[in-house]
Amino acid sequence: MSTYNVLVVEDSPTMRQLIVFALKRVRGLNIVEANDGVDGLKKISTEKFDLILTDINMPIMDGLKLVSLVRNDPNYKDVPIVIITTEGANEDKERAMAIGANDYITKPIQTIKIIEVARRLLNI
Image (cartoon, rainbow, N blue to C red; front, side, top):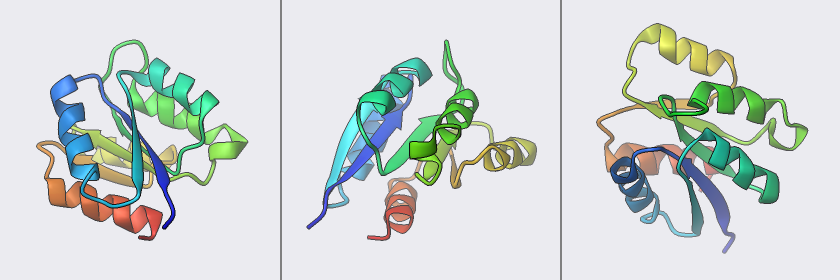
């Protein structure tokens, strides 16, 4: 049974808890939490992740900046990234996908949606 490292980058503790709770229902995931983009980048530099879920609207460094920095790192060019956001507008989604996100989940979050996306992107 393989284990996958998943990074959840979200500045709202409540939201983060919700995402982590959903992901814990998928077997074989090791979940690491980061409370903003800078914290997320720090964790990415010290550990290898198989999947990254990030919010867009965060202080210090937003999710889009994080995605573009991650995509510029050769070790992470193929790691699936899911954007989780309240921004449901089409141009936001297009911008996120254009800079390298693999999927886009709009808040309010449904547990089942997170589980589906994680399973699909990790092929489990």
